[in-house]
Image (cartoon, rainbow, N blue to C red; front, side, top):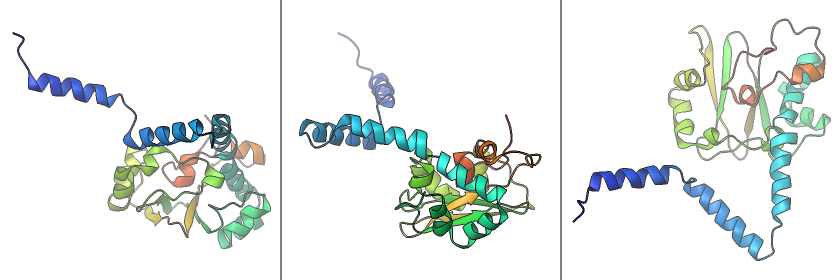
Length: 211
């Protein structure tokens, strides 16, 4: 008779489930399958939207907004005073940016954005939110221990720099304007946009520059 090792069985069970998608991902897949089977959704349309938000919209639109602000002091001023209106100048105003506030990093201030209630995010200029932004661990720890969270992203913030955490909601979302890297005075707006990362516009990246 074969011995039954409960501990070993539990280990195998845990190992197998560790390779499965998350519960939310499985639910989304099941819902998508149901809608496709009923002819209510075209899978090619879903793929096209995902590609648009990951490859065309985000984070390229946000990067373009930041690059314009770096290049044009008057635009930067308008962006900080009335972000939706300034973004609309570039044709990027969307449902997720109609109530948007831009906060600026400086030598003495670093900004970090989180949504503690769910995962409110300016997707119309940053694209699809990264998985970690929606994770409960980030949403809770970003408020309690922002410096610790930043350190896990490889961002070391000195004691002389104030860390400000901004909690997004459905009514008000935030975009971080990172500092313009030194030595980029002669770069074009297109070149500057290439330096801007999605994480820098959330606040989990600080020092930007050429590779």
